[in-house]
Image (cartoon, rainbow, N blue to C red; front, side, top):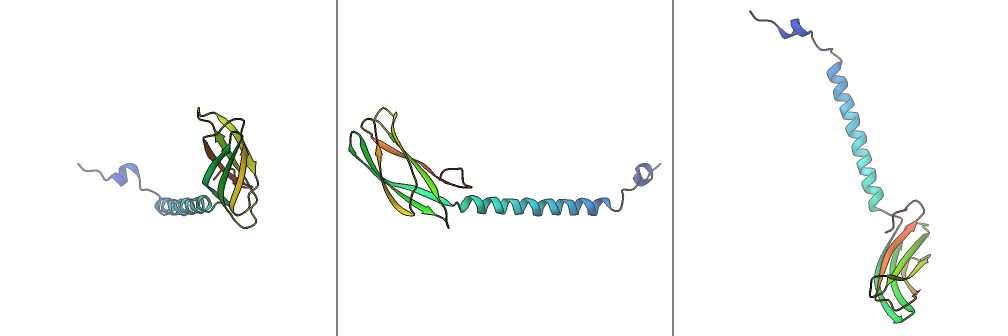
Length: 129
């Protein structure tokens, strides 16, 4: 004795498969569109910076050179921090950079041995770069 599964369980609706395929295609397009936007947004920031060099001038002063690339009409704020030999922060500077190379002086409470770039931020770009 054989039974047909369609007789036993019924046949699936005719609209079910095309609807599932269409929904999957729409979700794939939306997902790929979001992925493309996220890649573009995070690879083209309004401001980027790079610490070029630093020089300890005295016990209370350290000079640093920072290369800043600004996007169109971007206003940024950059932060640098100076550390002593025992790795404690001894000075910090926040400044508004100009596009290109910026030379700044960090006032320190004692002799610094290194300078760290905390990064630059701009409106709409809260993550320092």
